[in-house]
Image (tube, rainbow, N blue to C red; front, side):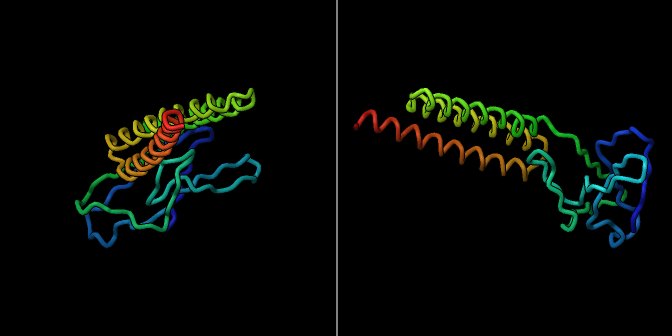
Length: 179
């Protein structure tokens, strides 16, 4: 059943919490969504989903899955906190990674434009190696923070970028050595 919690105008919320009841487990929430209303005070605006029973924080905004079942704890009377603020691992893996990717492709394009395609490829491959290290750091941060799903995702992504960059380096090296 829906519950509406009005907040004072101009207030911010960066998360929410639920408490598992002391009664029977059948009364526990299985799936839910959290929505926020944003309006102009004149009747305009609308509801936006800002939380759900299952969410993944990788990306510039969380992916929300309100229809997936939440793994409710078996222990009774437990408070579950849902902090929706971005973690430092997210800042590393998403924001920093996006900036590095932009610089590596910009440098690649600029070097190609001035007639230095080999230097452009070296620039791109070096940037990809650095990119894989950033993704790996984000994976480690998520692992330390207990966010195992994002840790595995970022680890796989870092390995993919690493293998792509090393493949390009090996290809470049073999062309220099074997002609």
